[in-house]
Length: 236
Ligand code: SF4
Image (cartoon, rainbow, N blue to C red; front, side, top):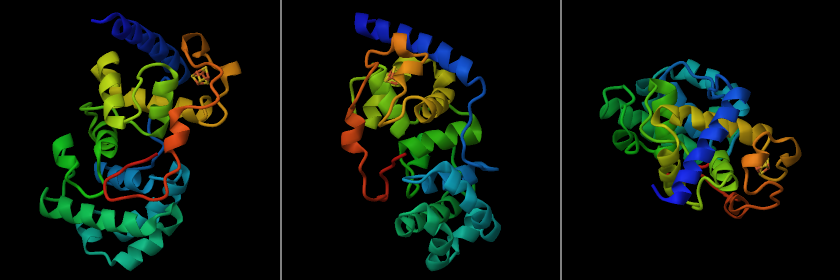
């Protein structure tokens, strides 16, 4: 193991110890009762808060309780229901495509591999990882969203800015059994302490481990001003 990789692995372990103290039982903030519901909620959460998604999904799942019923939905009706989450036209297209694929190709069941999941419209690696961990308890990768991306860079766990490369770096320095919860803990910490614009370095328990304590700017700012949700690209 190279010196820098060894140092990162040791720092990652120390960071994880502190994050476990703050968040002993982390979990997603998206309400869901099945892997399918988590998949739908995660697609809706792009460029939207989890809290807002949670106000939408009860009505969505009341009208269309499973992939087969959603696959038969009228796009205009679905758009009306999910409108408050923003980018509702593309999200509706993705959800209808996802419902059809899960129904027609996977027998109505959400598949349990990344390779299969990323063939579903609107699902790329981030959503696939979220669904695998939150829906099935499987760690096949580590979901890199906007918070994980920002914190990984600030904490010196990666020098990359591309989610796929960040994911690879994080998978090397965190134990596999921890990947799903590492995502949740970094997301929570990003919301509570290491804010994108105003990181609270003065009250941060990771400050002694953080090479960018006192940071004013990160690559995150340069890439966060997205204006739309495309077929496969994922954000927040
Ligand atoms: S010290 Fe500042 S930049 Fe580093 S993790 Fe804490 S809040 Fe974020």
